[in-house]
Image (cartoon, rainbow, N blue to C red; front, side):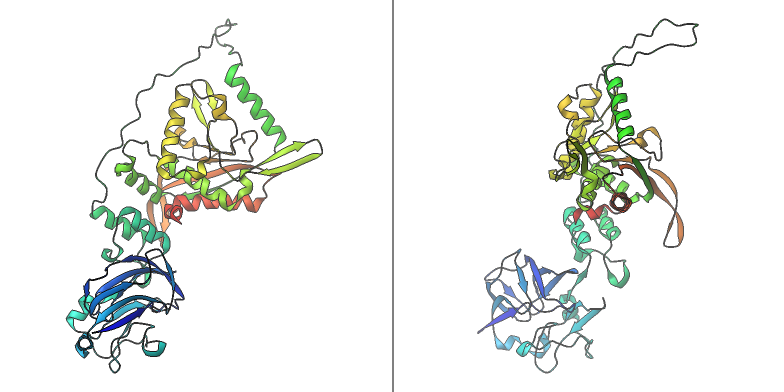
Length: 446
């Protein structure tokens, strides 16, 4: 028996370091040549590393979650020299710098991994001239090619990437591949999200003035309507509004909403495209903080106040009129927490119980005009803020995908901004970022 030390190899993509994601063995386990012993995450993919030795696992030298440089020792194996026979030459399939699968073996010096060999020499990336045996083919480790957002999506859905059939270029696993695998495996139990409970609406009676000739009536301007009118006039007259908009394929957003509705974690929460829109706005604010800023007039002139938090306003049509309560510190909420906050905000507004505190301190607002069947608009900015985003109706429309016209779920994202605070490039980048998330919600996992 002898102690063999296995160091982290370069798996064929110019690797300098990798994170140890999961050990597949423990001290005392028996392993054969090419048995998968550890899963690592590189900058490009999730890769399973096989053992170049047969024997008994001695010590795991690094822990899960550790980032390890190439060439660092990661595990020891007590092995018998007799185990390193020619028949046990390992075949390792990794990832080349050009995205091709690359196998390595060493006919003369014994088993080596890609980038691992005697004296630190890097093994050839050329395919071996001798075909591997059936046993070696079965036990060969295949590096899964998937971008980091796709790997995170797979983890969240409980999908084993090794079991996914890739359809992307160069054998890359795509988002659709992961979603299809999750659907086939019935990752989520089919639990329907309950409908919102019936809530009695509090209607404020409006007494019409005596009709002049029976064809007209007068409604007094007071309460919420008066406050709203004053605020909109003040905003429109003080802030130079500029509006931009773009169409977006929201089909993947609709798929995600469907999956969340079927998830046990969201079984008691209202889920709609507005939830993804809210997360998209919070995500995009981090990339363009000025849309979350405020213009403040001072005695000495004016200043721009940038807020490093997001109090996300949701414009709500209520029996009392238009209200804009906001979700405090939305940037700190998970998807589920944000869904609950949206549900509470909606129910409270419908019941007419939104307090002044609920409506104060907002930093940016979403208005969901799609619920009224509208595609786009140029909304007026809520006073004290510099941006408002409008989400239009999501409809099936013809859309060009890979050169072919297909029916897709399409919506329009528009917004108005205070041009004193935000320039054209900033507002355009922000709306483009929101649209990008609606097109590919996996960006939220980044």
